[in-house]
Length: 331
Image 1 (spheres, helix red, strand yellow):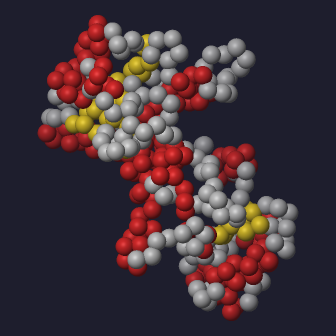
Image 2: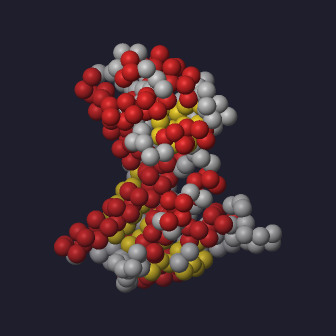
């Protein structure tokens, strides 16, 4: 990015751990001036997370990655004099991001109404798990709990039928960070037109339902709710599947369209009768698995190379970071 589109925008960041700090990191990278407010003593909990840069270092790698490019101050927000100073800072700020449970900032005298009184143009973004209201608003939870409670985890099952722990913090990032960013930028645009700020209620759990739009839509239309392993993107289709190779590695196969599916069957040497797989998906999966399982991952990587099949070997993270495409992209 050569432009700095948020140059001159000031952010007061009261958030900790992942969702808010990642959001303010993106704002800082876009040119915003971010002032991180931390509690005296231990500061942001992420500071203590492993791994550290080296033995004896106080800050963690995670903290440094999420908070680079920001200034930080320690504040006792229970001190009325500090609260007054923070409200004075709010008069000059454009955005406030906080991540406390609902009502905490209000009790401290730093909630939206107090900030709005100090600065009617303030954009106040509160990121929580459940939102500012509702019966679950005060329930303690982490990423896995939000993914579970919204039904998303129940659609991701392993071979034993048990839900699989996601390898990414889906709720924090996709349910918190990016919805916060989108809404903050929209609020800035709206403020350009109206001159007024607003309150943004970002509930991580709410936003996870976006990822199941297809499931909810299908259920409403067909009156049949999806199940783990029983639908197109949950493992029910041979055209959207992970297959084990002879050497214990895996192929991610997504030849959904008929053209890709036909090419795929041809490469693996499967009979043309499998092209019509809708009536017998389980039998087709078994047949494909038998063929994929007869050769190594390297064999299939070479066989699929240059052919439109939407298939690739599943790499480790280390292997993925060494991929020449990502190197060429500057990642």
